[in-house]
Amino acid sequence: MSDMKEAESAGELKGEEEKDWAEAKAFFDSLKSKKPRPPKPRYAVTIAVSSRTLFDMTSERKIFKQQGLEKYVAHQQEHEDEPLKPGAAFPFVKAVMSVNARLRALYPDSEELFDIVLMTNNHAQVGVRLINSINHYDLTIERFCMTGGKSPIGYLKAYMTNLYLSKDSKKVQEAIGEGIAAAIMFTPDMEVELSDTQLRVAFDGDAVLFSDESEIIVKQHGLDTFFEHEKRFENKPLAQGPLKCFLEALGKLQRKFYAKNERLNCPIRTYLVTARSAASSGARVLKTLRSWGLEIDEALFLAGAPKGPLLQKIRPHIFFDDQMFHIEGAMELGTISAHVPYGIGQKYNRGKLIEENPQKQ
Image (cartoon, rainbow, N blue to C red; front, side, top):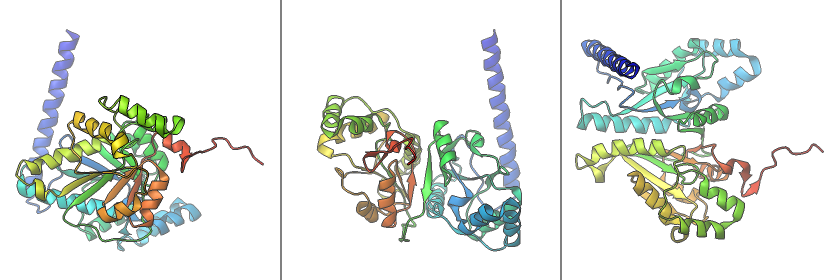
């Protein structure tokens, strides 16, 4: 009986939720606004970005650290009519919105869209400058979460977040620990021109799309043992990594274009950029993606070669990797990069084990 009551209660809650959304839609439509209505979180691909990734707040951050919260808030209020400069995630967000425009043209009533949420621990008093900056650049960001100094991580699940981008490593690690795809954004050393008609997303493989199980073997037993292991388990799919669900979400939107015979003109393109060798260890990766029912548009196996030069040719709006030396190499050549702090690679720097508790001299 209790199970039946729980099922009935869940059904009633879902019915109430649908009713609330229907009322909200009717109200929004009655306003006759030219701005598109944000999609329902359950259907959207939700990307939460921090204010410091969306905008360059380096000087404001310096005021906060050197002069404290009150001076920081006062500075933001005094300059709230001055738009903040674009930050590391800005080109990615603009490209996402370009995809949304194409989706709305093909599917006017669809809720399957990207939805950007500004997720920040800024105080509400700073909100006016953030809103003014968003309007200045004509960004469609309607959902804000300003937590007044508290960590916003608890709200990520409530927003059904598919990806969280921040400059705060602790918050990103916390999000990954909660099972949410997340990465630390870095600004490249130089600016390069990116596509304004196609969203390009590049992923590393191990410890990003896949678990770090194979990387553990490389680090602990060497390449020869790794090659033997991958050959032996070629037909056994790798476990999923922290960014697998985001690739899955991108694939869901890509298929909407394919359904309209737009595969060759799809505004989303994905890349696998891995240090693996194709012949020695590539088959397991491709078979894993196949077993998940996921496609990758381009797979690049570099066999240990630097990733930066190849990424310079791809010009992705974002590149995800778990190894900081790959991130650094990519940034030097102008690639917007995002570090995924996950797996055994965090204990190593350029192949050498980092001493966890170095003795003081």
